[in-house]
Image (cartoon, rainbow, N blue to C red; front, side, top):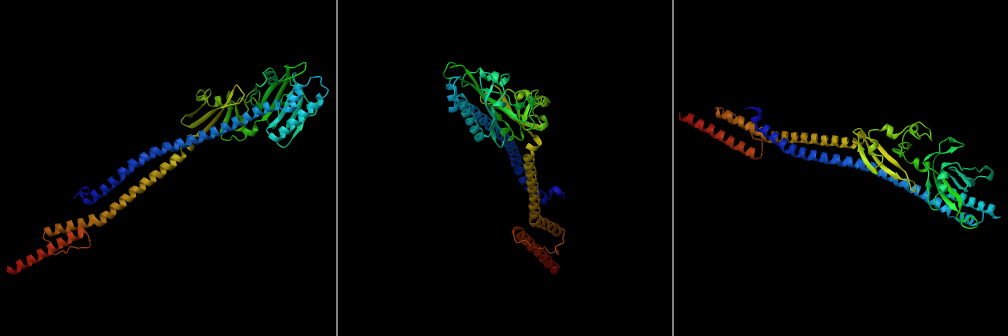
Length: 392
């Protein structure tokens, strides 16, 4: 009898089919659903990271905008603006402004400088700060900043309007400070409120925001300006590549020319170029007319790591299912098919006249009963032959 006609083969094949077909269908469907779910989860994790950083930056800069407006409306500042420019107590009023700005700088701890510049760009009050302390700059060290872009762009604004500078590296005496101090400036104009110059420009209130407060929190997500220059989240050699900063010309648009048009100008999105996934979000700077971009870049190999791990687990489970199915088939073979084949073999021998071979009966189930019946039949045949011999 050929092997594929044997009952043990048919039972084993049946077990495999019954086990593997449902397991394979369900398994591959679960694998498909789980793979898509894990991919979506990885993308959502990146999106949530970008969203959190975005909200943090916008909230931080929103408070910086509010601070400048607060300082312009502070009691010492308003008292100064209400006095005639020839007032005898003007010197004391300047001291009051300095004290107010000094206390504010110490409390907030996010500003390199807080200044009041008059209508000619001359520093009237200046507070310099670092991470540890703040101090009021003496009058003889105050400078004229009338030729600076931030002064020209803010002094002519309407009261209550805001000028927001580009985020760049701070310069002193025309040179980039070392260590580097990334700074963004918020400025608002003020006017005299009484006296002969009522309604005239009284200059600006300006703060130099220590951008490192939020830039240092950006690790694996690149922050770039609207021209593509890196400001945070990448190798230090790539930072501040614009001409007004370090001039290295390192730029996201140059590094990723194939996808730049799919990012810049859009509010948010997701791009997959096959090798990397990019999750990006536009950062709206409060008070500014420009924007930045947060761009999370992650290797597809890393994104698919959890998917691959799941697939390995799935294949392991499928292999274990096959093994268990084969084990069950073997057990069934040893408990059912082998006794049946043994019984079939004995029946063949009996049919050929070998009736003296005793049929071994060990099974206690239906096969055992069949074997008992066959053994009784064999015994009956033996007795019949013996009677026939006696008669002859």
